[in-house]
Each structure stands twice: as C-alpha cells, then as structure tokens.
Image (cartoon, rainbow, N blue to C red; front, side, top):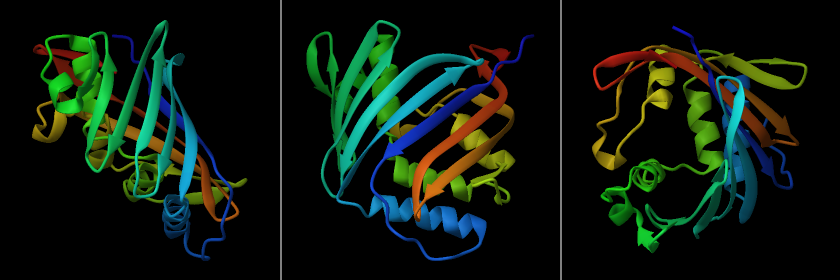
Length: 205
C-alpha cells in the first residue's frame, strides 16, 4: 500500500523580541512563549498530504481576545472565530457555534468544527510540539528533531471535540523543525506518518 506523508508548515508574521539563552528545547519553548506574549500576531499555515499542497489557513490572534481564521481547500473556504474555548464557524446555513456545527449531519463542516474545538494558536502549538520532540539540535539556523512515538500518535489522532473518539493510530512517527528569529518563533514545520484504522480498515497515512 502506498504510504503518504502528512506535513504542515506555519509561517508566522510578527516583530521580534529577545529570548533568554538556553538549551535547544528550552530556547524553542521560550521563543514560542515570547510570540504568545505579544499583543497580537498573524500567521499562514500550509498543509500538504502525500507531498501535495491541499490547503492553507490564514489567521490572526489577539492576546486575551479573539482568534479569526480563514481556511481554504481547493475551491472551498471556511471562516471561524474563536475565543476562550468557544467559537463560531460560517456554514452554508450561516454562522453556527462550534458545538452546533460539530453535531451537524453535514460531514465537512462537522469535521472542521470538531477539529477547531481543539484548536491551539501557533505560539501554543509550537511550544506543545517542541515538548513532544525527543531531542532538538541546532544546525544552520534550524532547530530539528524526531518526535516521540507518543507525541507523533497524539498529533496524528483526529479528536472529535473534548470527548475524543477519533480513529485508532498505530506505528506513528514524525519530525519537527523550528526557525527562531531574534528570540521569537518565525516558522515551524512538522511531518507525520503511520497507520490509521477507518471503518475497520488499516490505511498507511
């Protein structure tokens, strides 16, 4: 069975602050925290599946305020606004709360709503991913390392809102890279592969 690679890259647009000197993993976490401490920042996420670009996300977040997201995949687009663990998503039937959309019978909107219920802004996500790396090493200005097996499995698992219930994941592995400019995360990238069970059928992903 053909094996595909799922990869995501996030480029962050933000002015920079100075982070304290530390070991590679602590330096990346500090750079992520420094970004998260800003009043606001914007970003672009690029998503690849099997080496092919499949979608983008444009976002902007305010510290202690709302996060706005515009997602596109092919000729389909979706908008959402999130704040304090709650949010709303624009559907064909108008704006709905994430909880309403997650219970909808329309698969696409329902899936996105459930994913957004577990959304983390890039600064928080970068810090979380750095914690899932076995060891980070700095070379040519890039921090990189392999994910732990459990970390890769967690990132690869689709979660249906707070209740969980996504497909089973086996043999998950992956890697991550982080770029830091003047003490702040400016970009990060991670890739994952493993086996998922959908409707009792194993698929290499």
